[in-house]
Length: 320
Image (cartoon, rainbow, N blue to C red; front, side, top):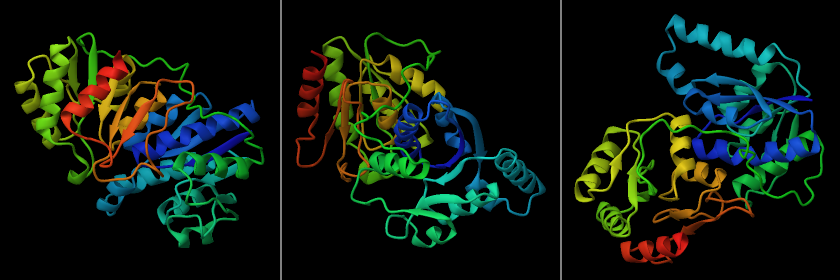
């Protein structure tokens, strides 16, 4: 069976989709998947063994450059890539008007959420098959149930499985040993953890022989990482890396400490232990989830103690 899946962004959303593919592969062993994803996240679908075709799109860039001929050439290439293969099902797991529009490039009936389950209710009007999936469920569970309903299999008691156990992630950087990966960057300032706390944790880890490794994705994050490294001599600031490179860094870390960011979900998928800090958001519906038999990532909210001392103590217990 070949299917076309649309889950375009963001990073955490794509990682949340992986367990649904693992379920489907267990129920439909011959399953092969084409996946439409934003170009910046196109590395993620390729990590899963059922995916043999990734079709990158660039909706934001295309909108900004709508009058350039190169934009329309890229759109034509993506549209043709979606039409060249007959699919047993086309599933829009994003649930937005833009993803519903993309899904119809395949010129086949589309399955998606119904108007009560979807993020943008108007998008459901474009689906031939509409599935009722509670919005009170975690995003991973919603994805799993949507794909099961679309392909007609029973999930039963299948455990959460991201399906990345057989993928080899390389890390080309020279890294200290042992190290904790500090995922300090996130999409909103209110989701950040105080810089002084990062420094305090880094210094505490250094006193126990553990280094802090600091990735970054933009100029603001780079400047913060460099300030932390000045105050924590054992800290290492990474060069800017793509998702494959960052996955390799995560895979080799002793543990991961981070805020509400997509890379924390990658860490869970790679079975790393750690702490996820949620100073401004709630993890119930989109928080980090680890496989049941894997080292766990604990989610901490303001109801917990998010001070540097408390976080350092939790890390010490985790690594003991």
